[in-house]
Image (cartoon, rainbow, N blue to C red; front, side):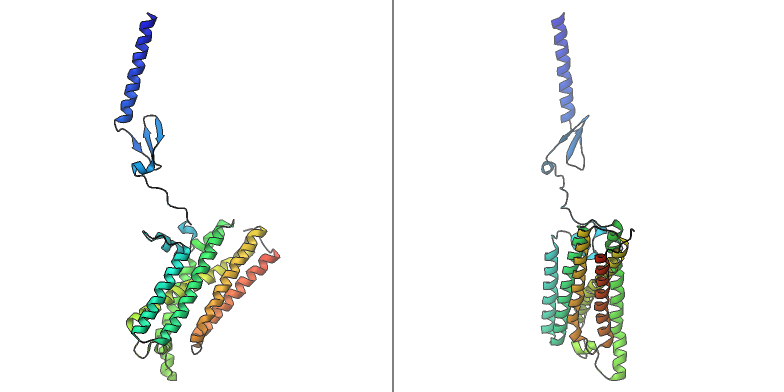
Length: 297
């Protein structure tokens, strides 16, 4: 009787094992988002490549903690443009286009001014990437990061600066030229009948430049606010001061535009005023940080 009972138990276990095997092989499973297969009461890891599961993308800055410029470059489908690659591509495309259209339309003055603008914009791109990555690598207040990146105030400042610049070039400057009899800046660069394509390229470069300038100004303002409101350790404070120096360096690079604006008092005042303002605000931020004048935010 015992042997017969043992054989019955063994047969029952065999049937259960067969049933379990059938459950695992009849396709009644589901694949979750982590490359695993869930079966009845069990979870087994599978090869993601075998089941076609997508690998997680390489870690990078969240779009809420990045400049709009960084977010756009990072969101381009099929493009793997790291910081230096994006800057190099920007410089090459703009400069080649300026040289090409300057040669086709015989615009030597526009080529010189455009080259200076591209160089300044390139310096601004490098500064933005350095400041962005440097800030994200530090243990600073989430409020500071939200103000610097998530608010997108730099875009608002850039739009205002670009609208003011276009208004000056196409409205204010011609009105002044009609009174004084002197040529406008557009006439000096493009002749009496500015060609369409070079003017389009000029506006594109100027927008890029206005965006960098708006970002520089907003960075200086947030830095000063952080020096007053946010308490950080000594090492973080020193790194933030270095980032302030990077921002001032970009502001000083904008002085390359001054030789082309000597006869344009309004634009000369705007560029010079921006350079002075960024230098003063960033310098004040550095002084406050070094003296340890912090308050809890």
